[in-house]
Each structure stands twice: as structure tokens, then as C-alpha cells.
Length: 48
Image 1 (spheres, rainbow, N blue to C red):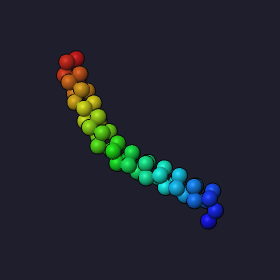
Image 2 (image 1 turned 90 degrees about the horizontal axis):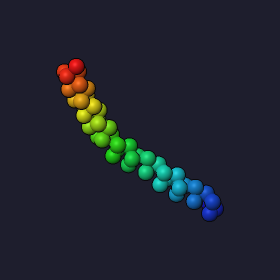
Image 3 (image 1 turned 180 degrees about the vertical axis):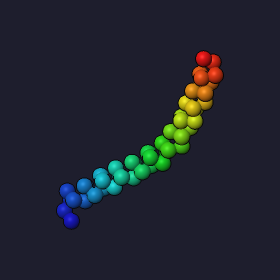
Image 4 (image 1 turned 45 degrees about the horizontal axis):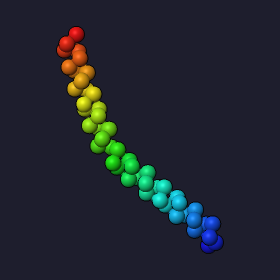
């Protein structure tokens, strides 16, 4: 393998790992936000 190929593999590996870590970190946060939004929607509908 030449230098360019090695660099591409490293860049793609880091990118894939970063995306995976980002997705794992984002999952619970999005779930919590959805739960919070549902709670706010319920409160808003009670007030009207």
C-alpha cells in the first residue's frame, strides 16, 4: 500500500468511528428531548 491509500484508510476509519460515537452519544439525548417535548405539549394542551 502506498502512502495515499494508508492516509485514506486512516481518514475513513476515524470518520466512521467518529460518526458511530456521535450516533451513540446522540441517541439518549434525542430520546430525552422527545420526552421533554411530549411533556411540554401535554402541559400546553391542559392550559388551553
